[in-house]
Length: 496
Ligand SMILES: C[S@@+](CC[C@H](N)C(=O)[O-])C[C@H]1O[C@@H](n2cnc3c(N)ncnc32)[C@H](O)[C@@H]1O
Image 1 (cartoon, helix red, strand yellow):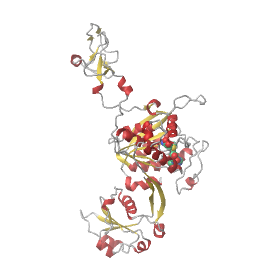
Image 2: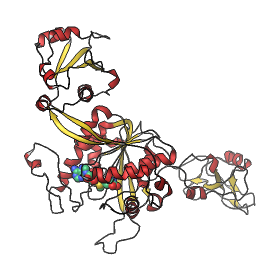
Image 3: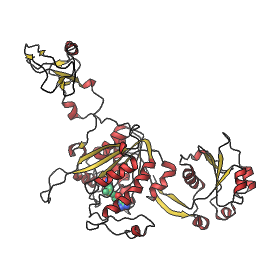
Image 4: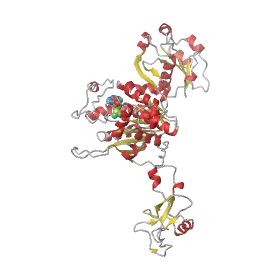
């Protein structure tokens, strides 16, 4: 959660597609509520592994998810979408949380992923072979769902029995259930057979006149004997340039959990990490195809083995995209497994069966470790002060909720950006002795540039302290803000 907070100043409103795969709360995943909270009840939950007997396990799961979903929403762009993997342990609570955070009007789909390929004979009641992927848009009106690439199987349904010069086609139903006033006439087939009318309860889709026009254009198929119920010829060259995504995703299309494990085995042939809840890159690629542009930013804050990063690198290699990703993982293996998987995807694995993976997908990424929370006291006492730019990004976003642009910084005056209502200044220097002396006083205020662009605009000044009273600040059109109590640094560990 702290990592998501640390992203806000620089990435709020910029993420086009979020995929998350949180603990399903099955009772045997060994997850524990681990947020730093003040509520005595919730403090009591800390670090206690949640099992099936735990009567508060759903409460704990909801309390873990709700603040994260809220932060994720902040990070999404207005046309963005979020996809959440879950199973029947929590799908009902997830839908409620999503309705609350995103609004039920922004619900897009509840996708069923067929995750296993053979039934479990040992299942007590049913052999469960699906997961849910719940999808919401940030704003349904702005969400631009893409079509999926046409598959060989879909194209194979088209052929050309009458050698039509317009190419392959497939027959489409000429009747439908929707009432159509001009759709109940009898038809005489070219072979002479008379069809009295559409099937009971149905209507022809076209008027008699329109049918004749379509027939004249050789767009009606009467069968080889010219006496069958007519069908409309739907030409491959005229259908949409892709497939409308459906809500059931089979393992044939997107892989199953065993395939996910095999992919990981290819990447770690000698030291296979122990993961039981893996997803396949193909599954995440389908999400990317539906909900991203070629240059979109994708976020996964429950990264696990890093499948989402793998899928982004692979999709870019396949379609020449420049998509970027942010993955967050709180476990110790973030470097050794999550990041290592991506290093191997980029560089290639000599023993991999998949040719592209053998040579590597290419690309790059940086690995960061979340720094400790820094309280103002610590800032003043610590040797490792955040840089001016780090603090500027934090305070500007906290104060305005608007995007921070580091290019705007003018160190001479302390100007860090212009928001809708304020010119924002930061009086700060990452040197302890100088910082102790730094305060907002009248001589400093006199040196600040005047505000331009309307009498209601003000100058918002962040500083460690002030030597001016409220009246004097007001007279000078200044709003003072104490430097924030806590900031979260992002410390770059190893950039590639
Ligand atoms: C189901 S796994 C994700 C698997 C991933 N999709 C893949 O294909 O490898 C969930 C991940 O969420 C992480 N996680 C993040 N916050 C967590 C929390 N508060 N409790 C438990 N797990 C958490 C876990 O460390 C785990 O790696």
